[in-house]
Image (cartoon, rainbow, N blue to C red):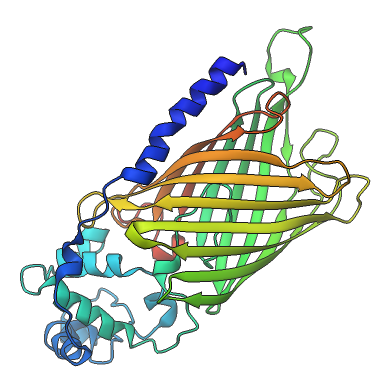
Length: 385
């Protein structure tokens, strides 16, 4: 890519940065309601909610409620801890359809004030009683490259396309399964296609492309620290990357690689958030692949269409990596991007951005990045639209 086109991409990234810095924050109306005591929250819950959800939060029996729709168990920490307050309040205020659930869950927006609903939610949170589970407010938006700290149940399809030089298409499917309060298992399966360098001796054809499976990775993450009051979460992950890809075709490193890293997330004022990741790539055979250190930073901001509508999260990501050999220099990239929720339940999300090399741009390609994320714990892919 020539300098003019690269500058064009840089200029095109400025609107994302502008949205990040100056997009209007959600309405502060909800913060202006007077606080209501926990005892009042319990009283309000028993009068407005317990007939269906039970006095203990486990759900009233079917013969009492008169319908066979399963009711959530508010005492189940695995369920109750995951969703941020905004999702609970959206359903309480506008009813089940606000998040793609049954209309049997009525709207209380005209019967209860926003402060009263927040008081009820505070009481509902007490049903779990186990503080080992990180709260949903710490589940920050996922960036395109940096690994977040929150343990999650997700499936992610990601795509990276080279937009200059020889074309390469890299795909990755990531399956994440949470276990226990703080832990997550992860399986990553990469695959892709790459255009062969035929130096102009052949016309473009399907025979000029190579395809194959990449190096499959398995990993375990644990959140070692979280604090809802300060909005902080910290985790550590260990991954083993197996040599399942064809190194000769460029789809693998040809050796097992151990990749330990730490991740950090921080909620900031005015709907901003910060995330970081740092770690190492440690190959078993250093003749096939070099050791490398990497660190990544993300600054973002989330805002909502209306009070409970679609969520938008512009982010700006900075990536750095350096081979651990004498004389090697740091390779820097930046990735302006935008994540958006696609459905009412907000468990299907997409993110698109561009990875721009800041160093050695004549040797490293600019890439268009994209992912589609399904938070499958919240329901099927086609639910909640």
